[in-house]
Length: 95
Image 1 (cartoon, rainbow, N blue to C red):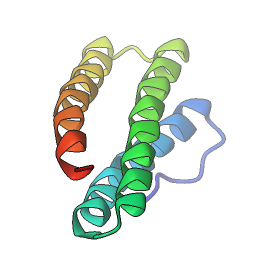
Image 2 (image 1 turned 45 degrees about the vertical axis):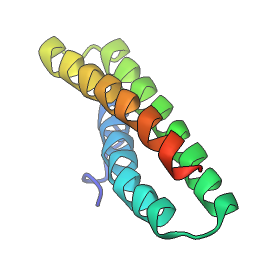
Image 3 (image 1 turned 180 degrees about the horizontal axis):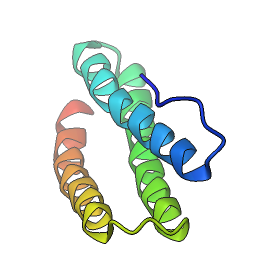
């Protein structure tokens, strides 16, 4: 899934945000279905990187001058909520 090809920095950030967000459920499923602790650790680490990237993309959109502040705050809030749930899930999957 991707947005139209555009040279706009804002469009590229939005595309990265969308792409990374769609990777999270994939990585969760792989971690849940793996019997290998090493693979589960790798997936959990990758999800952590993705969530940090999501915050960076939101910051980039803000710096690019996006006017929809409410949307940016909504994105930030959802990433925070996900991170809390992710930390709890991470503990259970790495046992």
